[in-house]
Image 1 (spheres, rainbow, N blue to C red):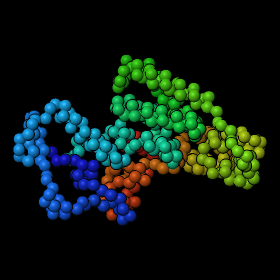
Image 2 (tube, rainbow, N blue to C red):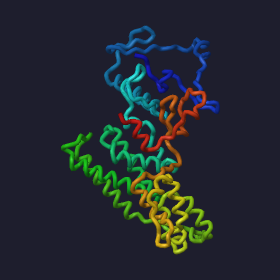
Image 3 (spheres, helix red, strand yellow):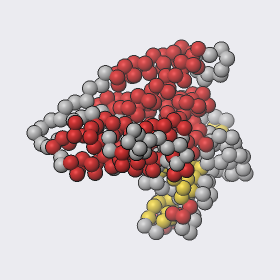
Image 4 (cartoon, rainbow, N blue to C red):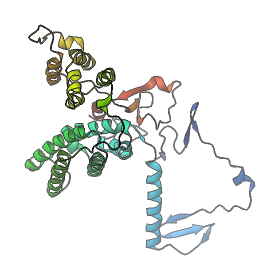
Length: 357
């Protein structure tokens, strides 16, 4: 069977990213050919025998063999997982046996470091929420352990930086509901791992929920200007740039002036047109007592029946030419003439759909 390296198209080759694209690294061989002082030792371990330069030496002990094998495996694993991309294949081929699973992709794409990037934080959190709703039991044991380790890191980050706690509260609520159902129906569903482990995870989720509910936003430090000191026009510009309805409502609860701006019907009209198409809200319009369209009530009504538009600072990308899933900043060894034309942004739901067979 041929050796399969990191790049499935050219086994054993190393690639480097340049301004002109990905190029294969070529190592000079003059030193090996011209220097006669270098001795090339051939090392073979077979049935307890070791040959070095065709001279029989002392056979290695069992502990030496185990140490050699463990060192080789650790080096291979470190080199194998240094690339933050994965080839998505759904069936067996001559080059690859089996298919790519959701758990494998979850481990390979290094979400542990992605959550430290504020551009990717919401994307990873939304992905964890979707996995908690429907795909949690399809993860392998190692992927489940990685999932909860990443979730623990996210909770610690929110408690420390106080960044977007509402999103993580929703994530923990959905995950707690799923875990509670799995524990209650443990006899009728297939769980990977001991039931006591799942009960312990559920208790940890409830503890995290309590910590986030008791989270107090620290007051502003220093004597500089605050949001309340801004002019009315600048406050209005801030509200019109927000895409989350709850951010608008929370800002409206700060002061009476913010409340007046947050109740502007034109603001909610823009928000409706951003998240929903015209066909969705033109069928059943809701009017106020004055005969005007109540765009705020329209928004929350449409939210119950239609999905909102998702917006993230950075997302995973899929290369249609190479069938590779990767972070755009990390890149991948693409052989297309125009790699940018082959890229497709991958939403969290699309990520899960890629691994449904």
